[in-house]
Each structure stands twice: as C-alpha cells, then as structure tokens.
Length: 76
Image 1: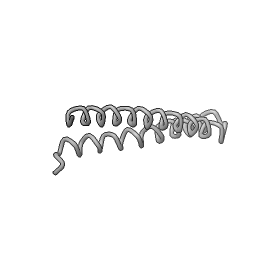
Image 2: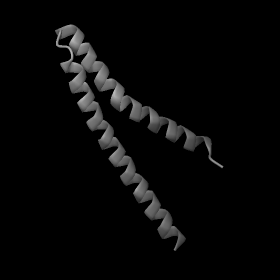
Image 3: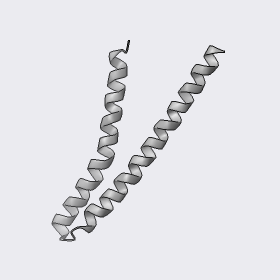
Image 4: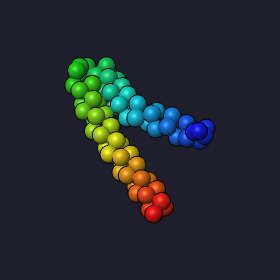
C-alpha cells in the first residue's frame, strides 16, 4: 500500500516535469508578443524546454537506479 507521502512525491515530480516544458515555451511566447519575433521565441523556448525535460528525466533515472541498487544491497 502506498503512503500519502509517496503520492505527494510523485505528484511533485509530475508538476516539475510539466513545468520544465510549460515555463520556457510560455516565456518564449511572451518574448514573441513583446518583441514581435514570432515564431522564434516559442521555438527557442521549446528547444530549451526539451533540453531541461531530458536533463530532468536523466537525473530521475539516475536516482531511481541508485535506489534500486540500495534495495538490492539490503536484500543480500
């Protein structure tokens, strides 16, 4: 059975992943509006967001691997 703390952890993780894409794209959109540079701000924001997203996923995978190794060592 999962505890509420685990649900909160995964909910926070999902929000962090969503924010890693939404914030740079939104900022790029605002830059486009104010500087009249459409679509370059959104495109740059999307590329930045994707880069941040993959970096975040890579860090999550590393942490998950470390936790799995710790569980395996405890079982031995």
